[in-house]
Length: 344
Image 1: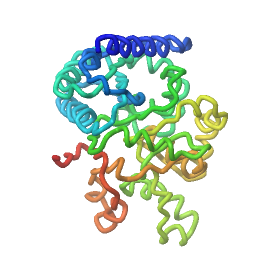
Image 2 (image 1 turned 135 degrees about the vertical axis):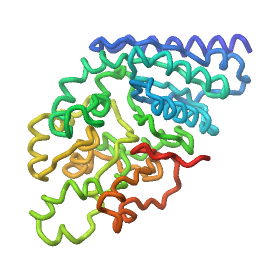
Image 3 (image 1 turned 90 degrees about the horizontal axis):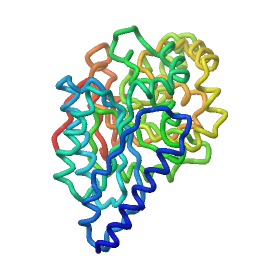
Image 4 (image 1 turned 180 degrees about the vertical axis):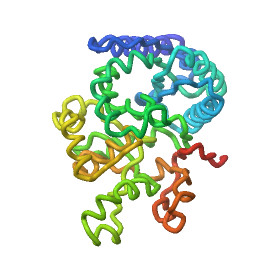
């Protein structure tokens, strides 16, 4: 038993070292902790890991009470809803120095309660990450920022399209989630959705469940005429970036990605749709879905069941429910707009 456990631990450590040092272009400050090596040693002989699920989350300025509460609920749901999954969870946390101790404290607290989950914790320094991705996200900030100092002006809302520049080169797939999410099903079930991607798809996102893009496109609809004013166009409702499946290997190799993230392409499509965005990376994914739908896997709304009611209270009371309708089983709640998530 001890020999088997030591072998598993050695393989895990070796894999981490290879991954972290095979990406020479990154200068990001990375700290790794294998939180569950003791749990591996204590696991029964028949317990075998199936794979690794790479999860990415940005957690900054967590000293604010509401963010700490959200992160606690997110992390508890992640490991408590593992189900029968035997994959190693690699949690990559992009954070700042002030938030890191609090993040670690939460993870250690719940990791003790759910010892069956095999967890690797990797810290990425937020400022170092920004240095790596700044050239890619600058056009996003230029076109999809409402005003400096507003909620969505924070750099944290622009990172995901450039994640492949930060992640180790050997990492081929990643799940990116917002801190205000709570799993109702195993994240391994979400990871298996990658198997449904076509050969062209780079990202997987669920539909936006509010009329925000219906509202943003009002000038464009008027320009296009009555057909676009009155008839429903589901694909124009846009996407929500609270949950993203990112096929990193394909993105790195895709010449199409480089074109779509360029200032020239973004400027052209913004002008085409008379688009004034303010939701960060989400606006970019939405415009890509309009122009190049074959690059986006449309994730079930049940994997990003958004709860925000803001638009229902601001001019869309009569039609809001038609946008927010989701008949799929709820696998993950997204408490956007600081909306409380229903208790289990």
